[in-house]
Every structure is written in C-alpha cells, then in structure tokens.
Length: 396
Image 1 (cartoon, rainbow, N blue to C red):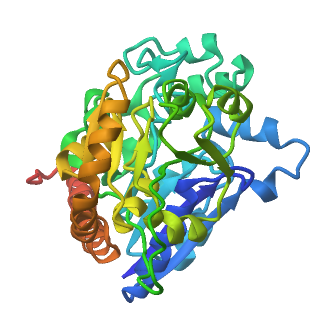
Image 2: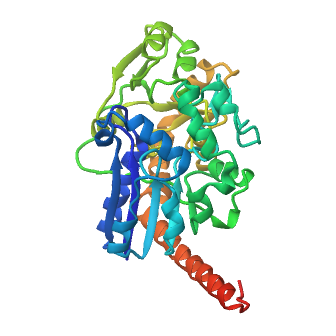
Image 3: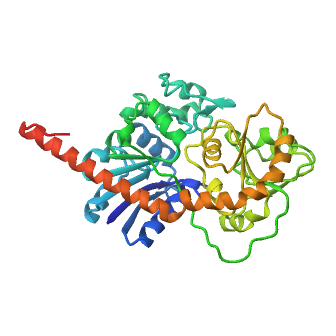
C-alpha cells in the first residue's frame, strides 16, 4: 500500500508526543512493508521567516496557504493520512483531493483554540457548546486575544464545518473519551475510529533495580496538574519529577523535601529507567486527547499507574485494571500506601495489557483496517457523486 503522511511538526523547543508518534508510525508502516512518504512542514524551519507569525495567522484564519497537493498528485498514494495541519499547512487543498483520506485527532484543536478544553484551572467546553468567541475573549491561545482570533474565526461554525473533519473518510481518535467528546460536537460516530497510539519497546538489557520512588513525567504546565499534585504530596513519600516547563519554579517551591526534580530526560533514557520506579503518577487536569505515550511506555516497563479522575488515562487505568483512580478531594497518603503493597503484583499484568492493546503489531493491524475502511468509504463517495452528476440513484 502507498501511504502519504501529512504532518506539520511543532517546534522542537518543547517535547511533543505528537511529533514522536508520527515518526514512530511512519517507521512501523515501512517495517510492515508499505511504501510510505512523509509530507512535512517544520516550524523550526519556517519560523526563521520574520513574517512567519503573520503568515501563520492568515493561513489558520483563511485555510489558504502552503499545501502538499502537488506532491501528493505526483506520488499518487492509495490513502492520505493527515495528522496535523496547524499552523503550517492550509486546509483549502482538501477539497481538491478526491482519494481516500484519514485524519488523526491528536487533541481538541477543532473545538478549542488552546486544543485542551481547559481554562482557568478547570475543564472548559464553552466554545464547542456554542459560545464560539469565548476563546478570543479569554486569550486561550498563548494567553493572547490577537493570537487566538484566527483560531476562533476558523472554528466559528463548529467542528462539523471544519474542512478536515468534513472531508475525511475516517477520523481516528486516540481514546474513548476523545471519541465521546467529538461525537457530542456533532462528528458522525460512524466516521470515527478508535486507534490508540503504540510505542516500540526493546527488551534488550537488564532492568534496573527498583528504587521504591514514584514517578511523574510531564510538561510542567497548568493542565498537567503537577503543581497541584506537589501541593498535596506527602512528605514521607519519595517522588521523582521528570520534565520541564513554565511552572518549574512554582513546582519546586511547592514540593516537599522528598521530591527530586530530574529535568527533561531523553526518551530512551526515561524508558530504560522506568522499571526502577514503583509506579507512575498521572495528575492531568485536562481530558488528554490521547492515551499518552508515557502511560503506554509505563505499561511496557511494568509500571502500574495512579491517575486522577477526569482524564483519558483515568479511563484507561479503570478499563485495563492497571492501577488506581482517585479524585483530587481524596487523601493521597492512604492510596500510596495501598499501592506500594499491591503494585508489585500488577507489574506483569501491565506488560500484558501493553502487549494486547498498545504494541506496534496491534496498531499496524488496526490502522491498515482503518485505511481499508476509508478506501471503501471513498469509493461510495465517488459513486454517489457520479450518480448525482448523471441523475442516477446510488445505493448508500
């Protein structure tokens, strides 16, 4: 199968699980024997243009601008898989591509300027609920009303009018929570396909000895909940924080002496060290558009999870039986004490859940099935269009 992957890469200045997932998926499809070509736009390169902010804003608001159409026509793929167009690709070209098209929704950008459905310390669905300009009033994108305006304008008619969502033959969501959220926004459920991310794990080498310390691995931003976690973290419980971000100073000020800050770790370094931790704490305060890679990597390392209610990870933990789910108003110490005694027995189960649901081979089977569904849907769409043009009735 010839597969075209279209992705606008975020700047490398901050870690992006989305960028990592795209690279991993391209490699997995090639390893499975498919002909894959990546059509990429890199923010790191484009931002050198002094007019980049203006060009990007105009592109987002109008949908017109840089597009991969000429390259796609020359390549003639069996399916086009779009991961992200924001902010470096336009969207108007989608009307001119008539072959099978699949889109992955890594976050909630079609519903929310911030892409998180999170504002002022709480979940926020005002824009998808119909208050289309709320994001601009609150400056939800980068804290700026001016920067948010193009996004609000592009999304003023709701998710069903989004050019990518309207055009895609199949729309991939990465968690059950994301699927429900987009269904509530009006996306037809029959076009949604749940295909979680995967991680490729090497079994080479020996596992490090367990340290008895807990692990948090996240960007230090408000929606990730690390600051709130540290404010209630028990003094007697050892915790390592992996990650960096705008709240680093606040997190250090809030942390008890039992907390260590390890900064940003290379992905391979983090993976190799994961088995040494007692368990993974996941305090996210927003929905999470996907079951995050760090959760999957933790399972592969045999690392059970404590998640806080409300995120896609909490739902996955409950569904897969890979740890405990708690609420922010519940005391943390008793749960940590219980987890310390029960998590050793869960480690092998976590590895089994990884193998059954999040391994590379499982993902490859699911994504190829989705591509085939998109191809059949495209054939029906073409037949309907031909029938309309000739005045003939076409069975759906």
